[in-house]
Image (tube, rainbow, N blue to C red; front, side):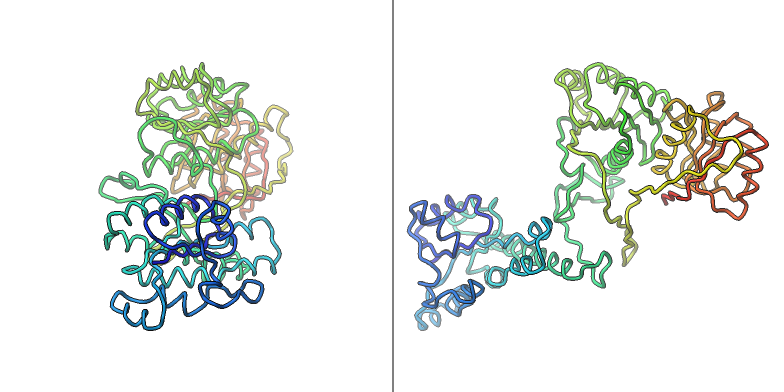
Length: 496
């Protein structure tokens, strides 16, 4: 019986072929795979010698031949017909496809990418997968050891079916990548979202909900590439909160710390060191941080770890952890440490599920802000940094959103209220006396002047908001009366 090997990804192929040969399979290969097996000293037959037909059209046609496809498609009950035709069965097919996504990602020309569309490979894989009761279709190098073990014992129907499912998924993902590329559109008529499971999760938002983590094929994300250094497995809610924390902490060039609860920041601060940033973020809301997620955009050191160890936390994220920090936090066995290799930056598509449908949009990663002072009094040199800081934070708070800040730290955050005045009241009450001389940021414009007047009663010194309401002049007038500097950004940051 033959084993046909034709792989773009050569990882492990020589050892796999050697194992097949030891089990009595005769080796059949194409192009680069044939050369790799020959160089390894393995007995192997070239595909053209098997078919009796040369490769033509610069290699475009080499496996598209009746001898190949009959040997793959013959059912067990068609063995006699196969022999009558003078053909022998191919019992194992190892194929993985030309690296189309990678070719496109590196900026290949249209003509070059077109040549990377594999035809013979998918045709063989689909044939073998359809006929998996007689042929083992193998498309993943990680499966080679399992296939060899299964062949020794006799592959079970369940094992064969799993390989067939994987083969059809492999060709489906490949076709999805080609269709996406050919559309040339961000929102084509058919959007084929290819997902690969990274992990099964204990449960979803609540224990009665099943859940899993998937990767969008061909994409990278900071949390998907992160290394879990210790602690329990990440949960569904952990991932949501960790993503929110990492997205926000990545906004800052200065050392920063972000504490998140239920996908909303509860304490955000800048500092000269990670420890200073953490102390300030903790002081912003020492109650809500309990059981939360904390993210740093600088390596975590021993002193900061000592401070973190005083509080119950679910997850800590950082670009790296010093040996001292690892030693300290190792005492918190259930605490998850995520070493995240790169910041959350750049555009991507945001997906929201509806029953029976999906909403897609550009994620809110850009901030084309050109602040415009609309009051007679401009912000002072001390107020400007706080205004910019508060504006970055409010972008990551559920609407309606209000952030009060001073000295590079949040003092009060009004989250997800059904009206803006309630959000402002929540933030200002949390800030209390600390609101005097602080700044206030709003994710959207003020439809009335009530927020400005409330802010004035707490001693707010400057406000940043998008502007654009038909009643803007009312808010400007209220700010002028209170001596508050007001800045319009011209950009809103709704988060529903």
